[in-house]
Image 1 (cartoon, one colour):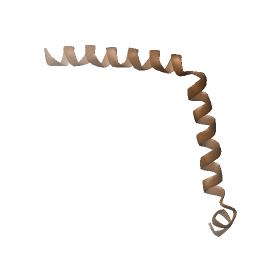
Image 2 (cartoon, rainbow, N blue to C red):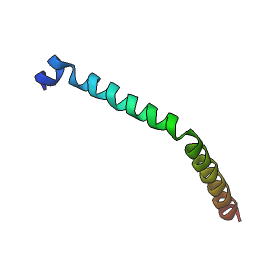
Image 3 (tube, helix red, strand yellow):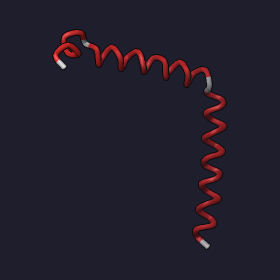
Image 4 (cartoon, rainbow, N blue to C red):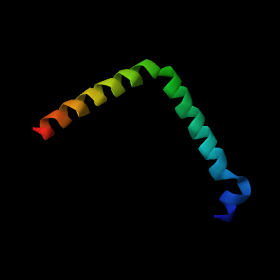
Length: 52
């Protein structure tokens, strides 16, 4: 573990991973918005069924 600390491995890995995720989110913003709308609609429909 001291090797990871001395090389700042965790912070470096975290930043690299975060950068890749931000790039993918930016690239697929419309797809993600459509997915969220569909998910919200499905959840609303399921809630209606469960309320009856």
